[in-house]
Length: 301
Ligand code: SIN
Image (spheres, rainbow, N blue to C red):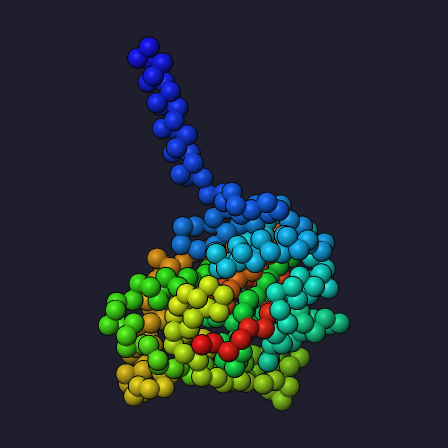
């Protein structure tokens, strides 16, 4: 009898342990959502993005996007550019990049491409996409079709947790402050090897709050990045430089990060309002190529 009770007890302890370790979320019916890491991201399976999706699938993808900030769609076929545009438009109007060359015949698609002849690879420093725009993209979806034999990972950082983990005095200091986001130092000459001269590009500049409130989740996120943010407007040059550097280092801390290792045709979809990302160019002279569509966001508040 004692053995039988012990056996039952051990069975339930083990089951509870498995349930606690389970990263698959069970409140989705049309897609499968598995947490990528405790602090950020989810892997999505059970949906084929090369075809049109159902309204219910869209609803669940949007919910997962707001809950996890970056989604990794696994086991995908190559998505035709026009299908990626249709999928992108489900989330809102598309955003036009002010400087990057677009894919021939598909003005909404930006090709991410690095080869042995490239002078730059996109996204090599931490940033939130095109934060220099008055209305930066709310989200970016990138599918990778050519991968190097190893490397080419992308890192993401959770800007809600970057904000939450600041001390109260620093949160109070930043409240109501604004920062300037510029792009001339990034975009000038950047795409000259891809047929875009400086005369063909825009180099926008915008002023945004240092801490923004996500329009869908209502959560606060730190909104500065070392690619585009050049100063905090209410501070002296010296103060701004020091405080920005502290905020950059804080937001780039490993505690807020994940690192995604791509498989062929994975598609990542990240929320620029509450994450930053950085693409690692460690695979030269090998090639990496993908297609990116961005969705227009609202003015950060
Ligand atoms: C980017 O959009 O910043 C590039 C991301 C990547 O290539 O992984």
